[in-house]
Amino acid sequence: MNPDLCVSKEETARTDAEIAFADLIRRLVKGASELKAIDAGEIDAIIDPATGKAILLPKAQEVLLERKAHYRSLVELSSDGYWEQDEHYRFVSYRGTTIGTAGIGGGEGILGRTLWELSFDNMSEDEWQTHRRQLEWRSSFRDLSLREVGGDGAVRGISISGEPMFDAQGQFKGYCGTVRDTVKGMQAEAVMPEAGGFVRATLEALATPICVLDSTGTVIMTNQAWRVFAAANDGVGAGVSEGVSYLAACDAAFGDERADGVAMAAGIRQVIAGGREIFRHEYVCNAPAGRGHFVTTVTRLRGDGAAHAAVSCEDITALKHAEQLLRLKYTVARCLADADDTSAALQAVIRAVCEAQQWDCGRHFRLDPVAGMLHLDGSWGMPVAGVEQFLEKSRGAVFRPGAGLAGRVCQSGQPLWMSSGSKGARALQTALEHETGMAGAFVLPVIAEAETIGVLAFASRTVHEPDDRLLQAMRSIGRQLGRFLRRRQAEDTLRRSEARLRALIELSSDWTWEQDCDFRFTKVVGPGMAGAGDILGKALWELPTVVLSDDEWVKLKSELAARWSFCDFEYAVVRPDGQIGYYSISGEPVYDEAGAFTGFRGIGLDIARRKRAEIALHEAGL
Image (cartoon, rainbow, N blue to C red; front, side):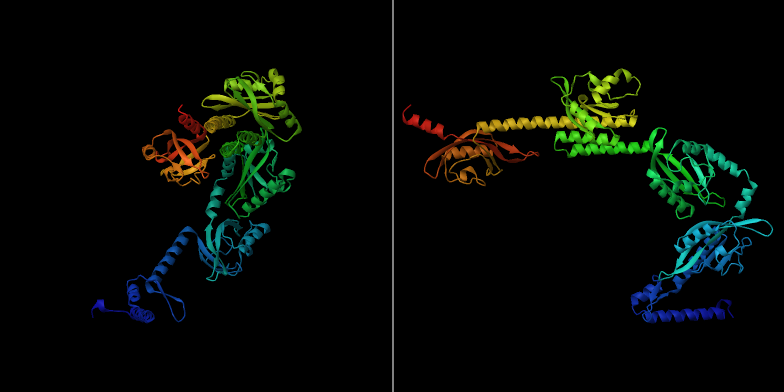
């Protein structure tokens, strides 16, 4: 017998089953194109029309089995065991090496039991309650460290992770997960007892204030930066040291710090319980340099030791001030962009600066280039009696360049700040109080095109020395305001010039007119031509009451077609009462921004009195 033709009974049975399955599929599938796609391996499953269930085809079944085997091998490579629990959190299966004496291994020791029913000794009842709450919330959990002491006195431990399972209808079925043996890590810690000292040395070397919390929120370790920070600041948890409950300090916060204490306590509890990996909270408190902004970060710690969370504090006052100055510059730019009135824009800018820097009031002095004097041009102040009285006294204040704080800044072009307690302030204290009425002042130039055109002066009961960021921001605001005022000055000059021109036109003419590119009247301002009726939408030669010779019409049309300006073109109009009216018009062509011709515009005069006088003189032979 040929060996190649020998077929075992098992192979024959398998072949017959595959043929029977293929015949079943062909009976269910009627279309030729679908059968062709099945033969080509392009379809993974079909729907049984009788039951509505999906039937997985053989090739797809093979791929699925391969993927399951691949996944199982990955799980085995990345962990020491795989387990499953039912909806009551009882173990129903486990595969992997036996770990410790807790029964987590290939035997039946853990089946039907929950984790908290096993002999782990490093979990308190509160910690088990937290874990059970996680399970009830159907949350995934990672690296839950469990420890036990065997009969031989050896310490053994595992790290267990799990995630919930749900059926096709979304019903909770239990948990599944993996186990890692942490005995080697614990042995390494035993071999290296100096590791704890290394950790502490590392913490001490860090400039960031850090403390470490255990599962109850008690501080078990701090570094030098934390001890300095806790002693110098009076925010939530001020003075907290090793052995003190950080959670208790947060819970005990009161007054303005109550809200911060509640938020931080809740975040710390969530991190310790494993509900979140990191928690951040920003707050404000008093610091040696004054009122400051801080952010506390609570980070979950993973491991088998007592440490459960690390708390670090960072001073973000400089960052907050930078954000505040950026918002201030944006607010000033928006005030100037939206302003319809120069006075309102000045007041809005001064108010924005005062509110951002917590200054009491501000004033703007405009430099009169002709008189060489600084005149008060606008102000804003807090609605406080003392501030209002000071601003009232400031009305009519005048400074020469070089005189007073405003005059000195106008002359130098550089910002100036003064306070009653600053260096060198005693000599100018009398002048400062006279000018500001308060403890301090900040004065800066308003500059346009490298020229000082005014001064902004701010006064307050508390003025601190400005840092580089504030000086840079205030210089930018001074330049913004200078460009705005110079532009408004140019617009006002142009507006006044246009008003004068309009007045001259009104004095030198009786009416004005505009035409489109077809020489039809589109606008008439003034009395117009009496007796001509409604002339809008018509050319001059389309008005039936206009009297003009053919030669004169030809001359006018040729000048219009050539886009020439024309002056004192005279014509007559027959009025409804039979009287003749006489008019003179002058015009010039109009072009748009692209240079395209858009029509004519000009003025008109009623010359009837002059023409009648001329006719009378002519008839008299004079």
